[in-house]
Image 1: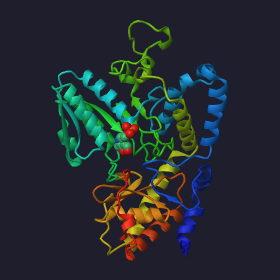
Image 2: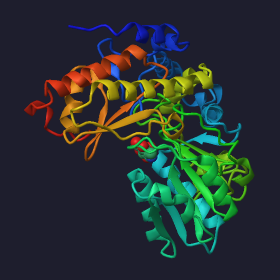
Image 3: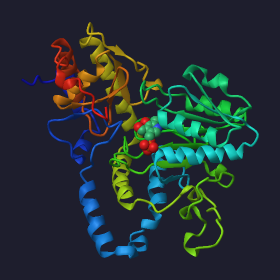
Image 4: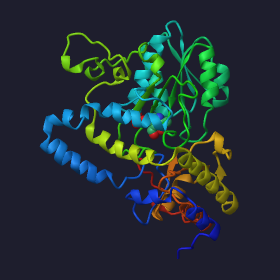
Length: 412
Ligand SMILES: Cc1ncc(COP(=O)(O)O)c(C=O)c1O
């Protein structure tokens, strides 16, 4: 039996200026999708556009399409569109590689630009790839070490020994959001550079890189930007730094004139120097659809709705899910969190699986975190109400306590 949401929820949906965007996504009718922070939903325009690119641009155009359909400009063109979502300027963002590879390129570039400094500063508990890549670099360059401190200690740990600070703006587990302006300011006072990982920020919260005088950033295309599984990532380098920073991957797409086939590497004079090899045109095509769709929504409405649905979710959890051993891990202050909310429960894994069996898709992060992402373009307030009502029911009936929900899959 489906219970309908109360009137105040329906009123919120009726007043939602973004509600028409849901029709622009191909979401299964029986699913409430709360995992757009891991893999965004499929825009309705993506499959027809990919079909067109495959058949017409690739099938008929063949190699000519690098010019006739401007495949060659796609990394910069889509980069410019992402730039406007994160408060950067045209020519400051390119789409390339994966977030992990982009972290490597920017860390190496930053380290070379700060000779004599010995520390890569990061957060203990940062997303693993960020720390793995930083650790890998410290093995390549033994004069460097990684210092990973608790989030509350980051500001005081910034000093003149630090070459570069690598932080994830919105934490993938807790949803905690750093004060980007304060950290960037302190880093600049000490002469250090900062790389922001915006994987859980781009398209989810208001990011204004120019306003905080940010140095560099990276982020992925497959979460809130709805670019599809394994979508290419993006990287940002402030214009004022571009000519002094060098990518350690001196591939031909980063050359000033790739089709001169010159004997020696000459980096492009601009952000193009951070490209490596041939871009994945099909992945870029799908990403461009997701980014274009998001660009249609006014930023203040998008990010206002993110905050509002996260607050509603927490409020409903507080009201209806008490007494079942569930804790809210994410901040209740909308200004210090991203667009996902994490809950804690010792039986987090089977609870998430029981919800998924009901069509309510969130995810689980070890050891005990139930994570729910709130993508403002395709979620309604009724979805949030139905999800919390189902969660209450799964807890109250102990529906999760069944063998079928306890076997761990490889991807959680
Ligand atoms: C904060 C953060 N950084 C990096 C990544 C991984 O990026 P990629 O797989 O594109 O290298 C993720 C993936 O979830 C992430 O959440």
